[in-house]
Amino acid sequence: MAPINYHYGKFPPARILWADLISLVGSANAAVARYDGLLSAIPNSSVLLSPLITQEAVLSSRIEGTQATMGEVLEFEAEGETVRTSVEKRNDIMEVLNYRKATQHAMNMLSELPLCQRIILETHGVLLDDVRGHGRSPGKYRKVPNWIGPPGCPMEEARFVPISADKLPQAMGEWEKYIHTEAPDRLVQLAILHAEFEALHPFLDGNGRLGRMLIPLFLFQAGLIQAPMFYISAYFEANRDQYYERLLAVSRDDDWTGWCIFFLKAIQTQADQNRGKAMAILELYNRKKSEIVEQTHSQYAIHALDWMFQRPIFKSSDFIRSSAIPKPTASRIIGVLKEHKMLKELQSGSGRRAAVLAFSELLNIAEGRDVF
Image (cartoon, rainbow, N blue to C red; front, side, top):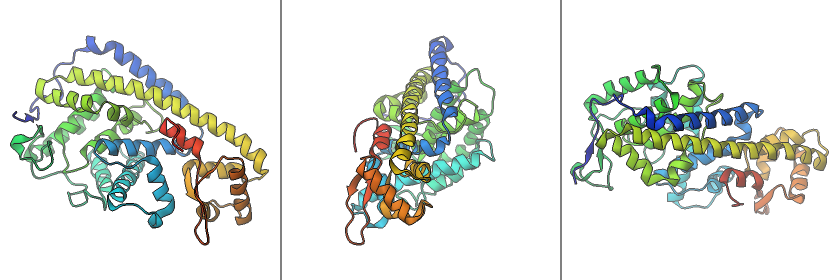
């Protein structure tokens, strides 16, 4: 079977069947608005929702073939170079950590610049820094052909062949221009932007992850959410075959409408799921605030809780060293929280080795199931 080739001359799409989209447009926008309403009510959302950012990095990377779990990533972060793991697992974990760093880098840049190619290029450089794709021109558009198919296959056996390298710079300029055009609906505009980015495949590696990272950035810039925190990859990972098929159908059949239907369903489903998880995290925070004060009788109780929301798996020595709580008080707080089973010991301390602890309730909310 001949490969599907990029849809030259058909971006932006000349025809979208709005009658097929109209009900989904309404329900998807309403779901995003409900999620944003909760997001705006969460104090310091970047702290409280940080486990969801890590989970998004895990799932988006998993679509590309990594096998690391959120627990493995956070435990690696807590233990650093002392953790025992295979080279392959370590590489997977580093890719996830880079995804999170790249997301933060893009969010920081977005506070000073509109969404543009400069943000894309810099973020790509962070994403591929010192990981498996670091030799594949991080932060630079490809200057050679690439194609998508079984590993090592020739172009003739590829499933999809993106735009040729000589036409890529102009095409990325058109893509950037479309970001800032007025559109009948911002979510449909975002669907088109995501599909086009994946079809252009502007880099030698990291295109899928970067394309999904763009979704919360665009939602934030368009004013649909008040912080660039939206987690889409769970739906794409659960519907991976359909995700790729709908993207391919854009180039093969000029079926932008079918892709937009899939994307709007993804946005609506994930907005509802994100809202449910964010609400559960907020409720947990409010409940633990009163519990930790009552249990520890410490003026540092809330500060300790905030620290643990940002680092739900940690070494006891790191908490004592970096939480800015006096050492005797920090040690006592950990002891009390272990006694009340708020903290679960993943690895007991012995000799000079510190215990590794997990805030299991928070991690289970982020995972969507009881894992810890």
